[in-house]
Length: 128
Image 1 (cartoon, helix red, strand yellow):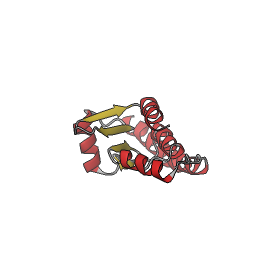
Image 2 (cartoon, one colour):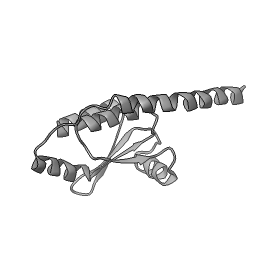
Image 3 (tube, one colour):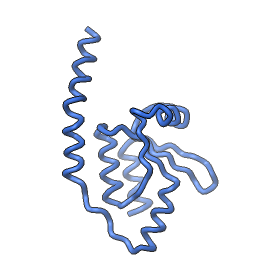
């Protein structure tokens, strides 16, 4: 019975995944327009951020859409297919839950922010 249930959900993911990616691509928001100097500063600040995500996770899609809306070039790390990124996520945050934003502070300390709502709120507060 377990294998039947797993097979069902695996098939469901295989069918819905491409549909979700197509929807994300078709509904991309326009990026924020900034002066070149302001965008350069945002780009510099984004170098200390990394988003650990799965490509077809709806919560990850929500965060990526907000990143596009705010024109944020945050490094996206695939924790689903890249075992090194998955291990780093597990070691740093204590779980493989995505989306997860790795924030490296100026003093070198690292914070891990989980939950798509919290990540979107953080990005809006810092960059909007």
